[in-house]
Structures are given as structure tokens and as C-alpha cells.
Image 1 (tube, rainbow, N blue to C red):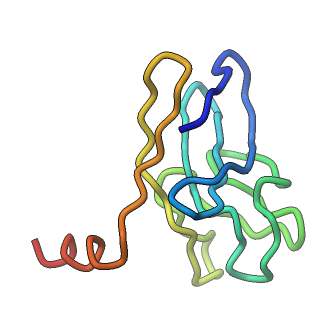
Image 2 (cartoon, rainbow, N blue to C red):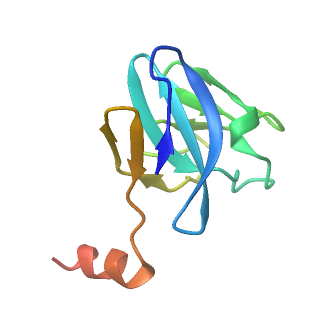
Image 3 (cartoon, one colour):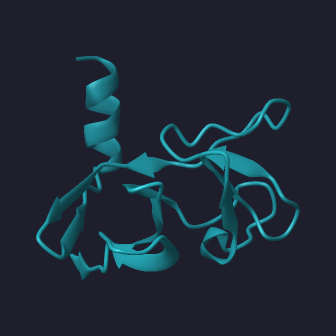
Length: 106
């Protein structure tokens, strides 16, 4: 749980369920993605948004804010997480590995 001012766009790193999460408020929507770039390990919370994508500050790799899918030709992705807002509190849903596997077969 994190308190957030949703009146302005932002990108910040938070901890949820023992994971580093990049929380992005962009175009009046809130997104949660893995905070580490899979390409070179850069901190994505130091990046910026462009055309509904989070741009890595190190090599400018781009990740779709909704799906986490890398730009064409990257062949990579970052994990995305469900976000719930209650007042000024932000909740990020972190599933365990086994919960993720179960969801693939349900």
C-alpha cells in the first residue's frame, strides 16, 4: 500500500510484496510494472513515458504500460501488475509464482 497524489503524472519506485515496482501515473491512468529493465537491469523508475510506453533511461528500450510488452524487435517484456486505488491509497496485486501458473490453466 502506498499513498499517491493522483493529481499529477509521476513515475516512482515502490516496494510491494517484496518486489520493486515501477508505479506510473500517465494520461490519468495508473500502471504498475516491474522496476527493472530486462535488457540491462536499469531502474525503469528513472525513465520517462512516450506514447503509452515506459522508456528505459539506459538504452531507451520501451515497454507498453498496459501489457509490459517490449517494442517491436526487442523480444522482451516486463511484468505488469493489477492496481487498485481507494482514496489516496494504492494497492498493487502481487501473485505468487504458483498462482501465476494456476491462472495459465484455468
